[in-house]
Every structure is written in structure tokens, then in C-alpha cells.
Length: 221
Image (cartoon, rainbow, N blue to C red):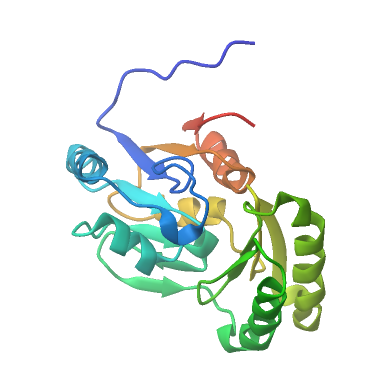
């Protein structure tokens, strides 16, 4: 079946954009990505065209997205919805005892340090173990994160992605973040459009489809 074709741009759309693999090519390590001036200018233009109905939806932290897209400060959901900045600039955090994650994060960090090619990323309310540089360690990476997560029980979830396994607060996902944005100005009453590339974006696709919007899968897989 051929892919669906999007209708022409409508000023009543609200845009939700994934970051890695969608706006920016995936790089070997989380810190080796960068946004070009042209990409920043394109986001600014789309933000103006939608009168502010544009939000970044990512597994990255909001702080890191701000660094990459400076001087833009856009509405955003980071760490799969564990943190959110609305269109008025207000910050919202998912109720989760982030300090309880510190001992667990330390264990995963130590595991990464013992295995060449694994890259540990601490985002505050979530952590990630990247194995892009050592794909043969995928199984070991998942096992290490699952084992480290056991003391936190149902408070956390282990989530896979493209060459990464993450530990995040249970109940947070990109779909819930989009759904919350859609209840607020300037997103409310618009048609949601979500662009994403990874399995973690499926949560957003399901919500956008249910709301009668447009889901755009970027890339292969």
C-alpha cells in the first residue's frame, strides 16, 4: 500500500515534532548532534506561520533542546513527557521522585563505563544507555537497565528505541504530552500533525490519529 499523501498546509494545523531522527539526523553519540542555522530558521518560520502552535516532543531534556535551537525557546515536552514547557513558558514536571533515580543511574553509569562503546546519558528524570557504537551489546544493555530498575518497581518503565534503552517515569509518553498540549492555547481546536521516526513516537501517532490529525513516519523501520 502506498503511503498516504498529506493535504496542503493548513493554518489551522498544530505541529508536534520529534527531535533525533526527525529534525536532526541521529549521530554516533547524543552530544555529537548539532542544528544548522537553516534548521533553526525553518522552525522559527513554522512557529510564526502557526501563530505559536508548534511544540518539540522528544526523549531529550528541554535544556538540551534549548541549547541546540538557541535562540529559539519553543513549547516542548522533554524526556518523553516527564517535563513540559507550555506556550506561555510555564514549566510542568511529571510527579516522580527524581532523587530515587540517582542510585539506579549510578549503577547504569558504572555498567557503561565497564563496556567500551556504551554511552550513558543522564537527563534528570530519566536515563539512557546508548549502544549504537557497540550493537553487539544490545542484549546486555537491556538486561543491565532492567536489573537496575528493579528497586523502583512500578514507578519506572524500561523503553527501547533506536540503538538505545531508556529508563523513565511510568506513565510518561509522547502521546500524553501531545494530548495535554491539545487542551491548551494555541493548540486547542486545531488539527494535530506529528512527525516522528522511532517506536517511541507511536504513542504520539495513536493520540494524533484518534484526534483526527495527521501522523508522519520519517525514515525506514
